[in-house]
Length: 422
Image (cartoon, rainbow, N blue to C red; front, side):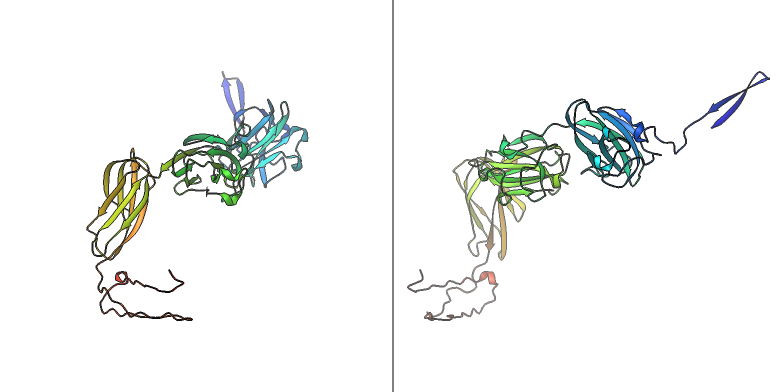
C-alpha cells in the first residue's frame, strides 16, 4: 500500500490510498467454494499463488483453481489445456453435487499428460443437459503458471467405428476422427485402440500405400487385413501393420500387394489407444512389368533383358545398382514383349538391374533382377571318368583345373544315370 499526500491550497492535506495485489495474491477462484462459472469456449486463467483446495485423483497436484460448467445438452465434453499453458497441468472434473472440496472417489475424469500434448492435459466425459460439473485445474507437483482452459464437444463415434460398418473406399483422401471411438479390432503391431474402419477396393494390380503422414493430429497406427477373414479380423491375418513410418514422426504408412479382385479391411487407430483427427491418403501403383528375364553369356559383358508389358506406361527407367543408367522412351502397350541389352559391362561382378515404369511422371511398381557377369571359362570340356554309385555312403570324385580362376568362373555339370533318378 502507498499513501500519497497532496496539498489543496496551504491548509488541507488530502491522502490517496493506493493498493495492489502482491506477487502471491490468490486467484479469485482459488477455493472450490468460489468456483468461477464458465461456458463452452476458451477461458484464460492463472494458478500462480493458488493454494491446494482439492484431492489428487490421478497424480500429485497442488496450486489448484476451480470452475463450474453447466452442460447445455447431453453430449461428450472435452476439457483441454493442450498447447496453451506455461507449466505442467492437471485437470479433473467432478459432479457439483459432490460438494466442496469433492472426494477423490467422485471424480468423473482426470488427466495429467495427454498423448501428443505433454506436459498438458486433455480429458473427456459424458455430460448430461442441465447438470453442473466442477472442474479442478491444477499443477503437477504444485507447478504454477498461466494457461487457457478450452471446453468443447466432440462428435459421437464415427459411423465407421465398427469393423462391420467399414466405409467403402478406393484411392483418394478420406478424413476421419477416432475421438470417441471404441476398439473393435486386435491390437496389432502398436497396441492399436480407438479405431475406425474402411473397406478398401483397389483399382489396380500392384502395391497400395495407405498413410496418415502429415494428416493426423495424434500418434496414429494402421493395420490391413483381407476382407475375406471377416469382422473383427484375427491379428494373424494382417497383411500390413505400422505405427511410426520412417520420416513421418508419429504418423503411419503401410504398403502391401493388392488386386482388384480382393477387398481389404483397413483399421485406423492410435498407438496405445491415442485418439484424434486425421485423414488417410490411399494410392495404388500398377504392376506394369511381368515375366522379367535377365541373362548374361560368359565373356559377353552384356546383360540381355526381356519382359511382358502388363499395363500401359509412358517411359521406363533402367537402373543399375541403384543408379539411373538410361530411360527407354515409350509408349509401352499391354501385351507387348520388350527386349533390351545392357552392354559394356566389366566381368566378374554381380549386377542388380531394376526397371521402373512411369505413367505421367509417376513411378509404378519396379521389377528387378540380379545377374552375374562373368568372363570366358579358363578351362573347358574337362571331365572325369564315369563312376558307379555306391549302394551306401557317398560317391566322390574330383577334377583338378590347372588355371588361375575365380570361383565365379567354375561351372560343374553332373550327369546321373540311375533307375530311381530322372
